[in-house]
Image (cartoon, rainbow, N blue to C red; front, side, top):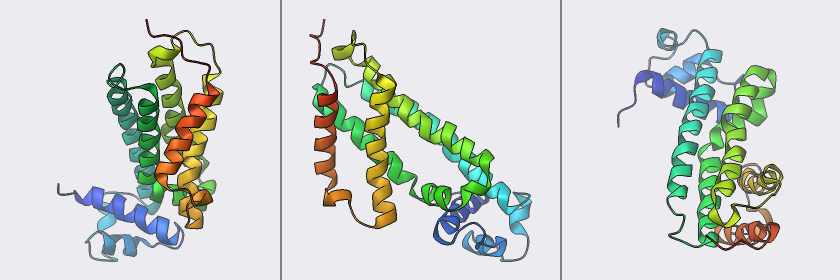
Length: 205
């Protein structure tokens, strides 16, 4: 699918911000990476400033995340009754790992540059991070095995979701797998931890 000029500017700007940093990336460099004549002002036909490009990138990622969470929950929900609980947990974990990996460029920008833009930190928090943790709560509450369970789902989501985020962030920042655990090892351990945190499942009615 061919990207529009606006989409190319956003994608290439985010890539450059992730690689070099926001302040170290010039408008001309974004234009060149987007296939525009560097320094000719092509970016300004779509955005008022470099900051507006960054803001657009973050807001569009947040909007996309909200849609993805809804789709993922629907897909995972369709597995109820078709596969056992541990397999469903495995799918949930893998979906989370894939999402964090997808946002690797934005993650690097977040930690390197966004402290100077608290309004954009709020977008990341409310549009990307919290929806992922909220989705874990929603998922557990929807599982028939735990229909009557009275548990601290928010606390459980913080532990399990935090583990998923940390696994990918460790890779991004350190360049190695945490504990040298391969993804399949991590997922299997995550599932065991998830099951161990919960009481014995009630019989499905």
